Amino acid sequence: MKTTKFFVFAALFCSTIFTFKLQAQVDATISPISLLWGDINASADFAVKENFSIEANVGYRRGTFFGLLDKREVIPATLLAKYYFSPKNGADGFYADGFLRYVNRSFEATATVDSLESQKIAFSRNRVGLGFGLGYKVVSAKGFVLDIGGGIGRSIYQDSSLKSEGEEVDVPEWGKTLGFFKIGIGYRFGGGKKFG
Image 1 (cartoon, one colour):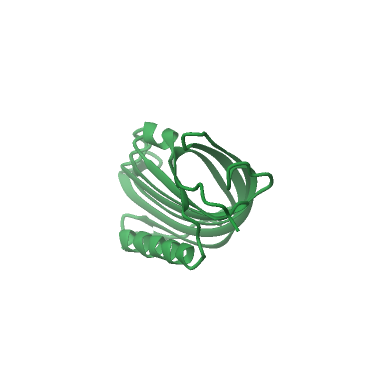
Image 2 (cartoon, rainbow, N blue to C red; image 1 turned 60 degrees about the horizontal axis):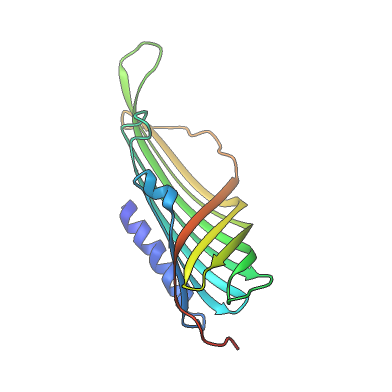
C-alpha cells in the first residue's frame, strides 16, 4: 500500500511538471550525503524561463537507524517552484522557492516497558506541507551542477497511527513545523537555447 501511495504521488509530480511549457533544459542531481547512508534522493529541475524552474525531488530511505529500530522506511517527495534573482546561465545563481512536500514515514521496533515483556510497536505517519526556502545553484561551463538549498514550512495535513502488539494506541499531536534541506550534485542536460 505504501509503495502504491509513493507511485501515485510520483505520477502527480510528473503530470504537474509536464503541463508547463518547458524549455529543453533539465538539471538532474542526486544527493551525495544520502548515498553515504545507502539512501537515494534524486531531483530533476526543469527550466521554464531563464529565471524560473520547477523541481521534483524524490527520495527513499530504508534501514534500522543505528540498530535502534527493527525496520525504518521514509519516502519524501517535494515539488519546488524556484525564482532566480540574477541568472547568468539560465536557472542558476541565488534563488527563492516555494515548495509542496509529502513525507511517508514508518518504523517498527521492539520495546521493553517497565521490565515487562517486549512489545512490538509499529508507527506510520503521512504529512503534507507547504513552505518557502532559499538556495544557490552553480552550473559549470561543462554542465556540472551543484545545488544547495533549504526551507521551512508548515504541515497542512498529517495522519499518524501507532500500534502496539497490533492494537491501536492514541498518537500524541505532532508539531506542524516542516523542514527541507538538500545538497545535490549532477549534470545539466540541454540548455544553450535562448529563453523567450
